[in-house]
Length: 123
Image: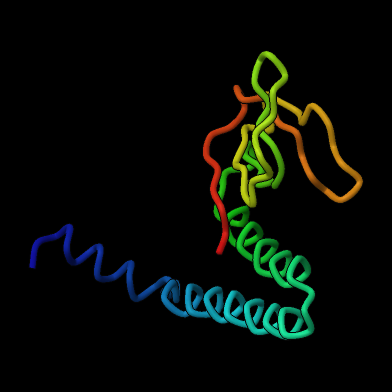
């Protein structure tokens, strides 16, 4: 065993191991639980509410893994000519350089196109 391998082996024994797989399993369980809660609302014919539960859980899971300069919102992307996109379930934007142009009472964001890094629909 080389000197560097021996040092790495000693270091591995001195520091606790990060249980990354367990962490990811817990995250998956929370998303599955959100889906289960959504099904209850869906069966009661509250389609919008059921979608909101899952969408919020997914946005929160994404946000926990992003650098602080980024925010995950939902809403519309606004062009320089002030035309807006349809509503999007997840919009990742650079909140360190841009603020939403408008915030709806329901939490919907209208975001300048220049701030948007990614967007998508959550199903």
